[in-house]
Length: 390
Image (tube, rainbow, N blue to C red; front, side, top):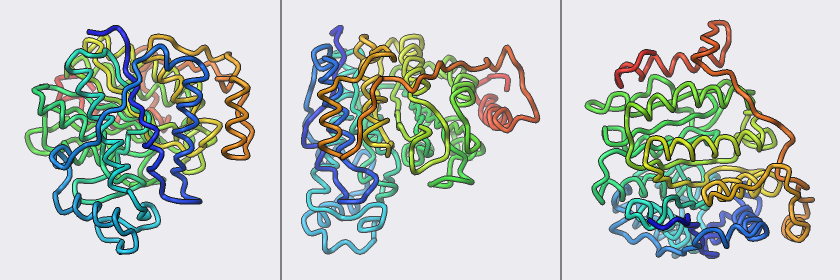
């Protein structure tokens, strides 16, 4: 196995563009790559542009009629009428939609192939993580579900157990749906409670289909949850499940929209906690999956202040060359931010927080605490299916 991680990047992924005023502004991808380069991380990884996902690959998850609908709308956006979720407020049609979406999917599939074949210990596609797309429809800014496609490709290659961890503020509903009946895939989503946020799914009682009970895990956090609660919930659920499931590959989604500045959600997580989460996931990959780690991006709509810093930390951790939180942001990059967005870029790679959390086993369950209620609901729902005490 090569000692260097892979960073999947093709400048053309910035063509995934729903148009002016849409929250999913592709400048967040360009600014992330420029920040990665500003810190020299592109020299610490192998930067790889994988080929686009072809129709046969897309069909591992998506229906043929849906793929054809995307291609038609991509060729002529004026034909979009809302069917298949295309041409809606969330997913406006744009020329080249199929090509841009398939390119992003190809990067995630390529990342999975590289990690499984031993070409790289870790691979990152921060343009990916489009976890809401369903087999037969677009949803939530997502056209093709690259995360599900990467997992499906791993299964096609003979992997017997894949764990998917999703820490985006929104429930990873599309990935859960794709593998609802498949006991080979453990999907874990830690997200804001569906009572207060799209897509209104991800209740702890959603645990997998017949024959796959316990394969879907949902931790639904109260609105307003901050660093301590977010990290406490993750560590109270995920490590024990991974130890029991014994994945051969870990696929993770790192949506940056848990941040307190994000305009589309209601958690209060700092950049420093997001960095700590990436470090924890990296450690879990080595502890439970022989280091095989595919890391994806996801949501994140504070496009200049949060997303580039969060995913640059992710790349640094995957490259085994983490960026110190106290690091000054390079001045040239801040000028690029202003030129692209007319916003002032952040000055340091930190929000000034030092994330800590209370360990579940050490501190015990507080029945009056809404966060602890959420953790216990998840453990009660799925732990027995894995032979674990809730």
